[in-house]
Amino acid sequence: MNKKILVINCGSSSLKYEVYSMPDRISLGKGLVERIGSSEGHLKQKSSKGLIEYQEPIENHSQAMVLVIKALTDKDDGVITNLNDISAIGHRTVHGGEDYASSILITDHVIQAIKNNIELAPLHNPANLIGIQESFKIFPDCPQVAVFDTAFHQTIPPAAYLYGLDRKFYDEYRIRRYGFHGTSHRYVSNEAMRLLKRSSENTNVISCHLGNGASITSIVNGESRDTSMGFTPLEGLVMGTRSGDIDPAIVLYLLDKGFTKEQVNQELNKKGGMLGLSGISNDMRDIRAAAKEGHTNAIQALEVYAHRIRRYVGAYAANMYRVDALIFTGGIGENDFEMRERICHRLENLGIVMDYEKNKLMGNKEGLVSKGYSNTAILIIPTNEELQIAIDTFDIVFG
Ligand code: ADP
Image (cartoon, rainbow, N blue to C red; front, top):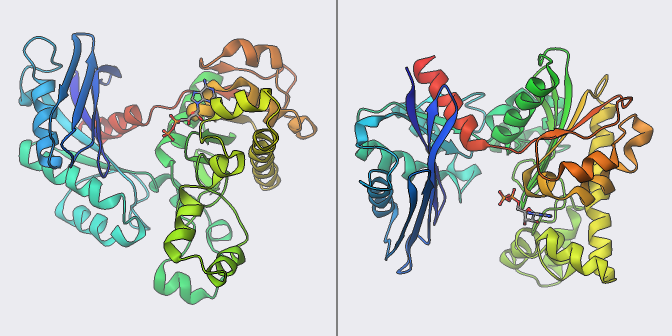
């Protein structure tokens, strides 16, 4: 029998939610609450029944959840008739540290583990916990599942997760590569297997999640073996506003030059990346438009972006026997055919050969965009983290 699963992604001032009918994977409706904690709170919910919008002060997450329930159960445009319709709840949870290598039914022990990992994700885990606690208040008898961004990467071997630091930093402070976006990389690699009619055994994949945040992962036999984000999401690719890899000595140099710790943090996380390089925007569409008008910094920003991705693809390919599939996903990976083309132009010497015409025509749809003779299948796969959370929740509670 079909079950309705509520998926919750609770951020510090926002709450995303979606209801899925499982196991048939049909989205019944979804919504977003923004500006929690302000007098200009806003909820927007879309479903086949209609659109619901509320504009009112939302003091805290508790009030946000009350509004979510009001919208979900709205008589005319709601998604469910009453709370008993929801059979289980899945929560996006950012950091499971080394405690969890897969999604898990939430118990007191799991809540304590999420709390223990707050110091590794001080912005995200507290918000995720609030979402869990508020859900337990409203749905006290409903099973709830935590789906961790980090869990998929727990299969990465020490060779790839240890930094070249004194062992004490790993032993005492748990400083290591954790990786993020795991739910997305897992979802798109599973989708790729379905599309290619292959099983994950004996299949090697490189998955590029290129959104505002961006990361790249090598996946062997269905397991993550290396990923570009590290101890925090700052490492790796050049992102919308994050620098990605830099020489760590630059941080010391800037501190010596009088920048405060908070200023350096802002430069690396909020003012860097494509925004900092282009001086225009963190949005690829704006940068592309400026580059077409000859804006030098925009042109260079696009070059840096693609160069960094190719550097990682090459490095990961060198650690795999074969690359069977290269996946593009995320806002840029799914929509920006010009960036996909730019990245792939130099990958031909690795046997990764794009069909540029197909790539252009594919737009943002799911599909294969490599030449028939390419050693590696190049795929565009729209990510769907909410669906993966619903799948995990259904499997754990009813599987
Ligand atoms: P998030 O990491 O916040 O989930 P998304 O995966 O939605 O972000 O990606 C958002 C980014 O995708 C935007 O900042 C923009 O750079 C890029 N993007 C979205 N649509 C397009 C498009 N049509 N062409 C190029 N880039 C796009």
